[in-house]
Length: 70
Image (cartoon, rainbow, N blue to C red; front, side):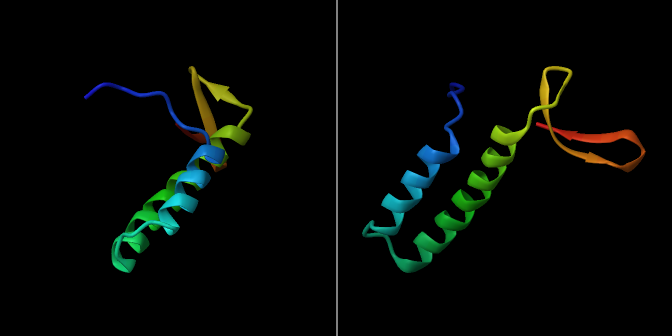
């Protein structure tokens, strides 16, 4: 599978809006919107992150010097 460029949160929100208006069943929409919502939240955290560590963005700093990076 080829690696694609990450999509920004604004584009993902547009996808979610189109998904809500689609002909999929309510159950399928709920599952897909749940996954998409989590992805949007993570993407927003990454977009707001300003600190980098080893070429990766720090999304959270924990006590005792531990950082969560993506």
